[in-house]
Image (tube, rainbow, N blue to C red; front, top):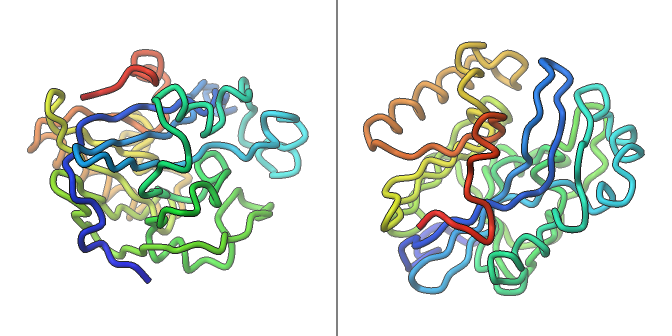
Length: 253
């Protein structure tokens, strides 16, 4: 199994937000973006973060929601061929075969729909998540299988390259990961993924998380870290922030 040593050699120079679709959570209700990212280093390395819904959601979203038991939680408002990883990477000027590393922040259905993408690249994932018999998908319908690919498994915070930290933040899921990168113009940027999906989740004490106590602990830890580093925060699923984010082809640099 590959290690994190020397995984990336360059420093991050850009982060493209990838738009994987739009979803309505019944609670609230609230409408949220489904997000991934492409991070590029000054050595030309390209890191793909998460891959959105499975391809079948672009063809029959309602049927897929029912099959995955996702319809009890919410409904897909938009998921078209333009919201696939390949289409979003094209907006950012690249293709799946040029990806150097895939980071899987966790394996819920809206983040892990293409676990077999870019097979030439290792997939970095928390060991606690990869140890599950199947990817999380959604409770009651774990249809996905683990792909046969090289994995880099992490159990703690780790620097995978200069100015690029992967933060182990279990709570939302057993192996939730967040990212902290240093960009030349933006400065420190904290990509929380679902460790903190939106600021209101902190006040809600992360109700409904896989482990609420751990989610509260790591939510507070990420908040402190963002304050200490004066970091720009990209929340996992924040309704208010989604429409303001720079999305591919625009980027944070």
